[in-house]
Image (cartoon, rainbow, N blue to C red):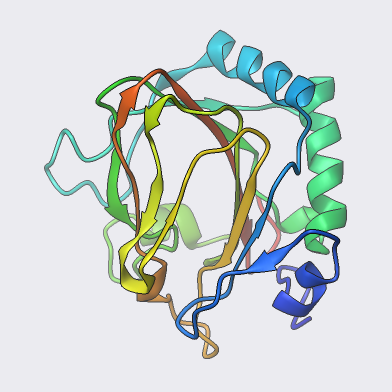
Length: 210
């Protein structure tokens, strides 16, 4: 691997059950049943306890761009600490480079329109979010429940739509080989049509998080 804040397709594929999304435009993997149903339920309870309206970097004036709720999850809670240790082993990334795990909750009609997880170096919030730890390297997202209808994650540039499935992990490299942000990671957390959707997200950085 290139450095302590990085992973690789080869490292991730060495884990049993990991599949690579077949596209030359993106480095992306999927693993079903990464988390048990019981572990998912424990994390859902923590999200429900501490959720708040989600916010947006480089706000574009569209109040409906991201309508979910968010929760920062603390390692002081045992289910979160257990998940952090699982992700450390799975990704091979130095845990010092990891952001705090975040949980998201979507009700019917809520979504996060097309966006990338990497930050725009020319954006108004670049200095605020990236001056210390640098750009985001990898994203790992886990669906915590089966959604009755809707709620898929659509990567339009690569023609891939991932359906929510309890315990399923989705991970991708946010960068091109030269380190710039990969526009093909543009994705849309599509509207929930029936039921609720819960996910957790773990992001990693070029430099230690602080």
